[in-house]
Length: 58
Image (cartoon, rainbow, N blue to C red; front, side, top):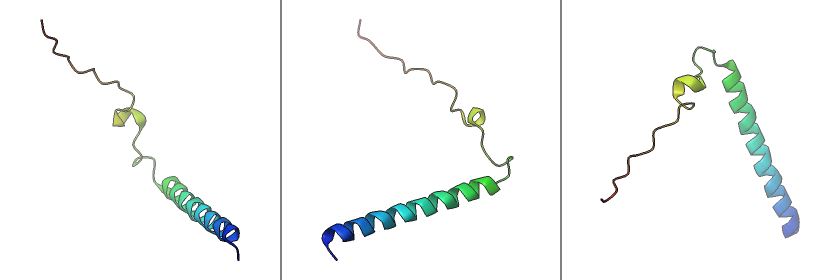
C-alpha cells in the first residue's frame, strides 16, 4: 500500500465518520418535540445589541 492509497483511505474514513455524526445529529433533532426546540426569536438572535458607548476626550 502506498502513501497515496493510505491518504485516500484516511480521508474517506474521516468523511464517513463526519457523515455518520451529521446523520445522527439530524435524527436526534428531528425526534425532538417542537416545544423543546428554541426559536430564533426567543433566543434573541434577531435583536441587534446596542453599540457600546465610547468615551471621547473633550
